[in-house]
Length: 312
Image (cartoon, rainbow, N blue to C red; front, side, top):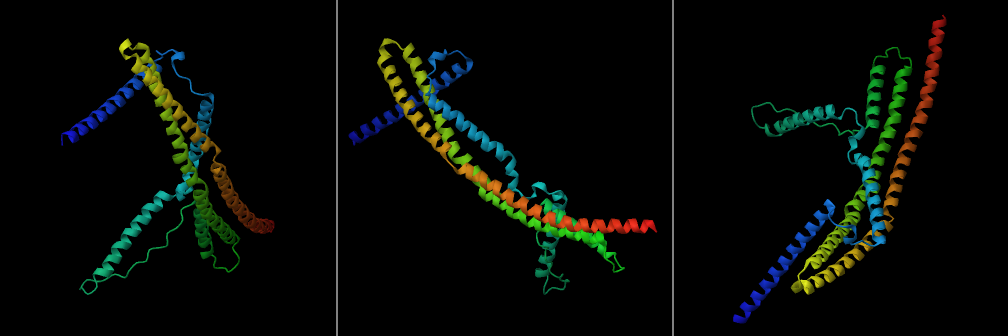
């Protein structure tokens, strides 16, 4: 039992000593970082990292900035309503409708068998897509219906027909828009975000480890420089260990940064973005080209009729 107690005591001393050593290193590296920030350390006293490492750092920084710059704009594709003109007003209306329908349906189910009148169940309208193309199609349909509803003469109403054609064209574009947003999210946005939050951030963390290791080395060098004769040997060993640690962490960071920079995924993701946009805008151009030609014929005919009526 005495032997076990001695062994436990030894482990306790080792752990305490290790913790104290880590705290001491952390304090010394913090002091070193503060001195460097204040400019009280001579440039030659700061360990210079390999040129290859510094070049890779700059390239990874540029890659990270490129990802952030594009995400700043393309993040809008996460939400369908990024170009919807009346989303707030319609959302409030839909919320009121859904609450009212919920209450009515609850009453319809729970008032059966009582003396109270039981309302008929209400079916909620199908959820509408909230994009600008969908809004244009719906508004044109509403306008066409309003025009055609008042046409009692039976003659062709050119404006009503033109509005109907415009609505049909935008319905096709709206369908293409839904496919576009899905393709952009799956093929570009999500993998682009993943690269930033995984491989790039892993490389950045490896660089942070290099910085801490470099600060610890320079702090150890300062300690060696100021050590009294009794502590010279211990301080020298600490410098050698810190040098080995920095070399190891620098090699790991270089490997990780190269892996990130050689990854072909960002180019593939960008291609998916461009492809989705090409398909969408091509579909939009095709639809608009067709409807514009037909509307132009109606426009020419209407203009001719107008001029003819003025001549008489």
